[in-house]
Image 1: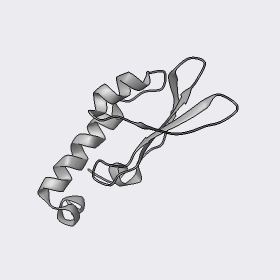
Image 2: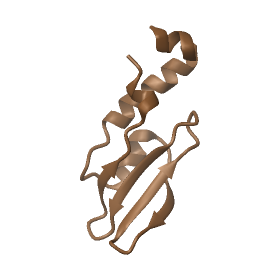
Image 3: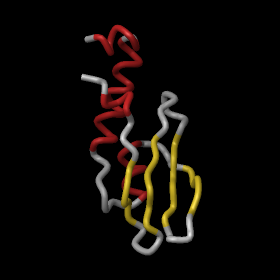
Image 4: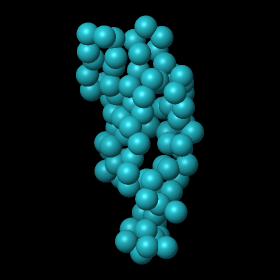
Length: 89
């Protein structure tokens, strides 16, 4: 209930929907699968010499979403958990 009071009903519902979508993103998925679930595109942030590519999206409700893709397999190997989403009920 405290999250609802802090954010307000409409913003709480947007965050709640994002949390549900974000929880469906699993390791081993492709970037395209993640974008389809989240209903937004991720932007290329960086790539390192080990073949890991970082994609992010900062536009949706000011929450930074980060996923890391292995270049060899084109699969998600890591996603950054969003603390603001974890604090929702």
